Every structure is written in structure tokens, then in C-alpha cells.
Length: 242
Ligand code: F6R
Image 1 (cartoon, helix red, strand yellow):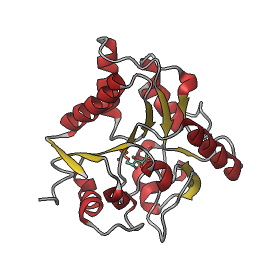
Image 2: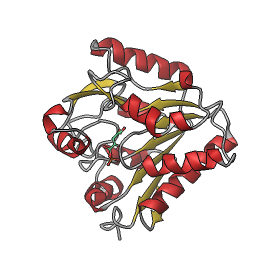
Image 3: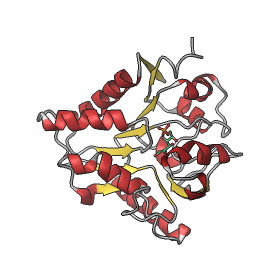
Image 4: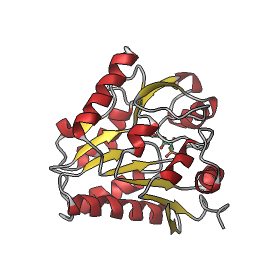
């Protein structure tokens, strides 16, 4: 793992955006794995700014998002598809047909997950997978458990994740209890992985990811086994890693 130490959230966002734009400049038809959540918002804003300046072109890029809430369709403002359109895709010249998010409106979990895995298998390995990390060490919605999941699967969200994500809903009761998520094998198949982290509330998870045993109790720890993984994190998130 290579650790890129950043001053604060803005610095982390710029460095994350730098790596993504370098990937797209080097390979215009790059396949990117993308994440939602608060962590990548600054990086997406920075990429939009560079796009507006003419510095980066997304016309040939294709994207594959990590996860989606079960039961939320693309027009639901709480869905991750809506988030991606609103935060990023609507502001750049990406072809929406080349952007992919698991289909939360398909309530047939087996079919929805198999369809996403087939799509990813047909695409081949992603060039760059962007990840955030949950306070409990999750990546995608691969919650702490007894084993690592492989392909896309339907997840029962951990109580701590429901709590953490409730800040984005009117009430905690509105947070969906289930989601579709890429599995660890999908994520580990990417050629390069960039995991971004910001804030003191991520410090323990970041420490466990880097120094802890490789264990499904901290899903992100599996990234220690990836041959090309960057951790881009700010001082607060790295505060336990001296
Ligand atoms: C989002 C995702 C999650 C988040 C993680 C951190 O697509 O897969 O693993 O990256 O929960 O979320 P934030 O960035 O909101 O702290």
C-alpha cells in the first residue's frame, strides 16, 4: 500500500482528483470504479472544474459504481444513481449510457446482482477503482463479517452504517436496510485501487486497514494484498498511523 498523506479534506480531494484525471488523460477510454458518500464529493467538484477548463475529457470513459440501495430507483433523490448524476455525471461530458450503477429498483436480488456481475465481467478489469472507507472498515457495502464476499450481492446494512448514513435522510427510519454491493473480488480485480479517507472518525478504520490483520472484520484490510493500492488520506484520518 502506498500512503499519500494530505493536509486536510481539500488537499485529499485535489490529490484524489489528480490521480483520476491522470488515469483519464493517460487512457481516455478508462474504466473507472466509482464511490458515493461524502468523501469523493470534493474530488468530483475538482474534476468538474478541470473539465470546464478543458483539461480533462470524459467522453470515452465508462464507470461502474460500487453500490446502490435496494428499493430506490434512479429518480429517487436518495438513490446513489441520482447522487452520481447530480454530483458528477450531469456536469461533465460523459456518455450516461456508459455509466453503471447496480439496479436498486430490481427487487429480485439474485437477478440484479447477476446482471451487474455479467456487466463487469464483460467490461474486464477496471483501470482504477475509487473507494471510501466506512467507520467500521467497510468498502462498498461489504460490512464486517465472518468471510469476504466475492461478487455483487445483497447486503443487510450494519447498524453503524445505518446510523452514519442517516445524516442524509429525514429520519433514520427512512434509511434503507438493504443494498446491492460489489463484492471484494470485484473490487480486488481492479488494476489500481485508490482509497480516500478524511476525518478523525475514520482514524481507527484507516489504522486497521493498514496495520491490522487481513480480516473480514475490517473489509478494507484486504487491500493490503492488492499490488497497486494507494491510500489518500488527510492528517485526521491518519492520526493513529505514526
Ligand atoms: C459508497 C460506499 C461506501 C462509502 C463509505 C464512506 O458508495 O461504497 O463504502 O465509501 O461508507 O462514506 P463517506 O464517504 O460518506 O464517509
